Length: 310
Image 1 (cartoon, rainbow, N blue to C red):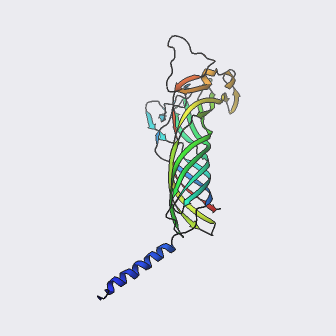
Image 2 (cartoon, one colour):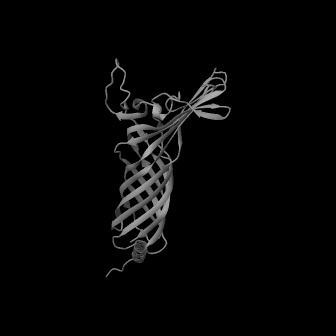
């Protein structure tokens, strides 16, 4: 009988050792439920032009611009403003179930506290105006998780959908006109608007590492990308005031407060298709129809947290 080559024996022993080590590195637990709690911060990504936030033309700001007029009025510098409202802090609670050691399903709920973002500004010798916006609200995120299920440092990938369920986009507007009320008296206009959204769906993806602390507890860190465009439904000016400022003393201007605005100037409905008359004045007691807008809430960020296996 022919002798088995020594090299073959060495290869077989080496392969057996490698497979044994690989099996030791894989967790063989049965399917299980888990809860993940995390917090993180997102930066803007996928920047686009901002929407028109001043349909009444109170500020003199051109949409999505930062305009500076020189002191003598001879030069105007125009800077384009682009971005998203997707920068801010996120807190998340997610429940999940592993169908097997390598794939599972999740359902998470998050609260997002967006940063205030400047979406328009005008600076001139006569007028100083600025518009800022921020997003605050809750969303749910169904998704799947994939992992090789290593025993120690365990990489994973998550992906799924983002569905906003509650919250508002807030727009804060300020305009100050020097000597607008006569020599030595400035006029200050301040307003706050709330934008409601229609049903919208985005998506997310994340790559992370999970590190076990005990049998049922682990810590994790991940990088997450979200792509979310929220369709606007309606908007309303909820705060509005006009103030005369003389020698540091302020006084409300009669007839130019929130209660004095007609419905047409403080309530707005977004529509994909509408008609309006060019021969008659609009109904001042009905909301104004304006073209549909989408709010870009995309971002990329980092999350850290803990995971409990039940």
